[in-house]
Length: 381
Image (cartoon, rainbow, N blue to C red):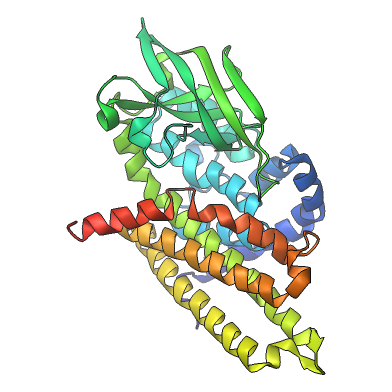
């Protein structure tokens, strides 16, 4: 089915991103997996390519695209090549940047945003804690006033870019006992005394994306580190989570779509009993189902992208897109592994790595169960 969400300008931008990834990123992918992080040169190159500044105003050195479809096009290209690359990069330019653009003071914007755009600075977002994953209102990290400053204590876990991030948006409790109404957001400079990193976490998939625990031991933050209003951090997060979720949905579909295309090629070449395995009725019917599932998911996600570009996407529809895309992605990739037979279980095969990379998408950006809870509440339950 012909997609209609993108214009010629988006397609031109997509091609430039694709060519850059193919030329400068893909040849080094194995070293990223081995080192469990994406090299700084890639971040700076992404900055030169204009990817990292899509939502940053021109005043601060960004491209100020003013159209979410450019974000979506970039995320698709990253995900088709490497899901971890999409995860790390999108956290920076698609998730963290809006918090600064919308909520930071003018001084903070001038200090950080130009370096965000160039890739000189890498960012992360710290929401999840050992005791507060899906239940963000239960987080235990605290920020206490000390004169005009704040003293931050606590810790975060499963933080993408956490091992290399220069700056982190951190959610902390500023009013004890108020749950969601007592949370604030802070921009935390990783060079400050008391900011500590744990080890790079050993994940099942996406080894290229460095993921770490973060610890805050009496980190003194200036007043301007507060993003938005005190005790309205939960509201600020809820307002921006739909973008994180639609970005995740975009990546999920693009990732599965690419691996499915490669699997179809494999089933045309792989012979058994004297014929291509894709020609067997079961496999032919299965591939027909998988292609249809991907295209149906793509249509819904494209519609959500278009609505978000117009500022109309609801949190409920973002939740639908996120959970469905993750579900379809995992179903499709599981079948792709099966179609590859024993080779599909070998790490040296891209399909095996993709299968491992995809499993987390049903957990992060709000688990699929939480997405269904959001949708169910909208039904009046």
